Length: 493
Image (tube, rainbow, N blue to C red; front, side):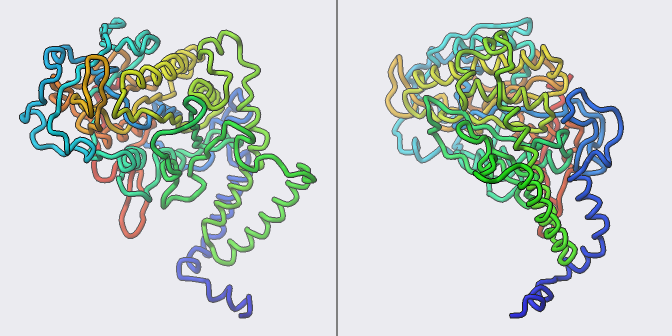
């Protein structure tokens, strides 16, 4: 077929109408490639971080924001709230007794325990003590985190409908159990834009455990852009080799050659955009430009040689090992300094159906000091005031044992009805112990917080009305909180 005729046949009504807005599209593209032309106001101390966002929606934020950025520490696999945060001393008298039917009340359980003849109660092996001025109970597993409870809002009544890992993580990250929706970070990038022209608005860090990852698989849709432009998807940094694949120029390719190639490629793509008006072409150009800038900015970001000994000691002995949770928490702080909007730090291997006491000891040793260090480091630098830090997983764990129960060992199954997360910084009321569960940590008695409520609150702190941040797709307006969600005012200062 004649290529000119083929191009003519490709044009659709959408392309036809979008061509009439090419002038606007070109201006928007220019702002991406050279945001300084459109920026105004005073420059921030970091030359890469601007006071005027690049991209974003013209009416966002909807009101004054408490947070400029988010660091989300995600414990993939569901840490046991019973052994870390939700103190249930009465359960000591219930050891190996059956969970009453009146507590479970016919609620759904997983296939991993549905065949058990009994549901024996497994009280936590770990001691709890009150900490801070607020007197929040914290397990002995978290001695460092316990020191900062006056900085935290500990929410004990998070709940979700999802009972298996993949739909549950997809749900809390995207607002839907079904794949295909934009992730939280992508919504933030779409609504608020970026504060750093040389780094992505949304960065993802994966933490190793014992030299590997293990645990439930984490799919890229968890940081994907769904039906939003692909420029809003998270950029996953690697801990070995180039932090981003193909970041370095290949042998024989100089920086000037790369620049000339991108200029020519940009010109060809711009011509194609003028012809067909496909907005993904603009995204492609912008992503090429971002990749070029990241060749300088990402190596500087990941080089921690300039950090003081005091800072490195704060994060603990693992901080110098790339890919560890400690190293990633330090990188998250460095990203906060550089204006990255949303930093997601994943750590897996919390899926403790058996041998929980030993496994949770190991996991808590890995995360306890770095979590404390991150919050204190942000606080010392004046960044906690406008950085929202979130800790938690996709659901909780059952009071009853999965498998064999002994005085020193037990496992726990998935439990979506109530579990614990904490938040800090950016207008969060420190020293808050929010919500109440029953004696079995099985049902919510007071102040339930659905994951849609959690996401609505995250957006609220960013100056976003969660009902107004929408995107029209397949004939309806979509949002992160679907058609639900209430801001949790009780944890806000």
